[in-house]
Every structure is written in structure tokens, then in C-alpha cells.
Length: 182
Image (tube, rainbow, N blue to C red; front, side, top):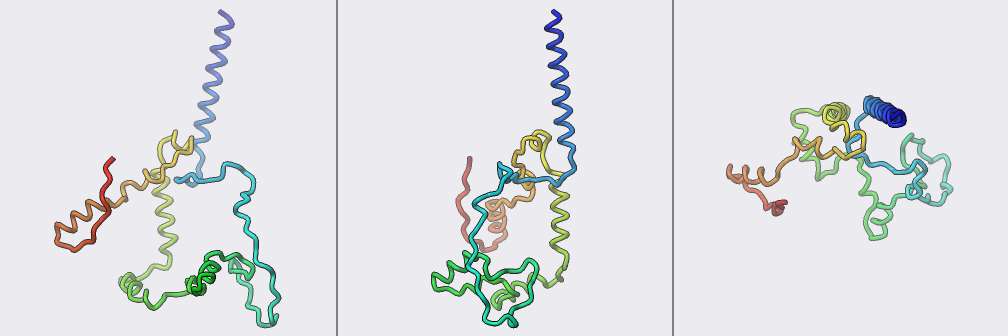
């Protein structure tokens, strides 16, 4: 009788300690991670290490551009540009510098009511607040369950409903992919 009581007391204390640890770990005030995509190991990822291009001596050291923090380096690997060049294309077209002539009309129309210079920061702050409010239930946070899609479900556009709504209004619409019903 004494051994059973001792085992029951140890089990109750162990469960209480486990519940306390789980509760405390869930109380952490960190940024919610919705996708939970991360490496399963803490060491370096050997696939993220890329060989660099060979070093080249410039024709003139006086003609070198000023270093730009975070800018590109001559020895940086550029697989997309290399592939475009190998296929006979123009790799310089991949550099997104400014607005291209074909995009000017779209940019002018989209910015007709003004452009906010801090829109990225504003959207990031609003998204962080949204994710904190919709980060899932306790067990989902504890066991790293992906709650990204469920957090944004209310913002999902139902393409088939929208297609029918626009057709009822008489708006010309292209065809949509067939709706898959589970």
C-alpha cells in the first residue's frame, strides 16, 4: 500500500512539473512563426555553401567603384544570370533598377492616389499584429504545427465565387480552372 501511494505521489508531482514547464514555455513573448520551416539540426547547412567565382584583378584600381555595404561582389555566384547568358540572353535585364518603360503606365495608375514611403514597415507591423492575434491554440504553438494558412483563411479570395459574381454583373471574365471538390 505504501509503495503504491509513493508511486502515485511521484506521478502526480511529475505531471504537475511537466504541466508547469509546458505552461511556462507557451508564455514566451516572441514573434509568432506561422510556417515553422526550419532546419532540424543546429549545424551548418552544407547545401547553402556556394563556390565563388575566381578572383580577378581589375584593369585599373583607380576605376573601382566605392564599396557598398550589402551590395553585390564580382565573385558572387549569379546562377540566374549565368543561365540567361548561357542561353544567349541578356543577364543585365535581370537587374531591377528603376521602372522599365513598359511598366510606367501600371505604376502611374497604381500610385494615382499617392504613395506612402513607409508602406513596407506599416504592412509588416500590421501583419505581425495579425499573426500574434491568430497564432493558433496552445497545442499548435507547443508542437510546431503549421498554422499559416489557417491564420489567413479569412483573407482568402474564393476565385469561383468571385468569377460568378463578376459574370452576374456582366463583367467579361476569362475562364477559371475547374473547381475541385473534396
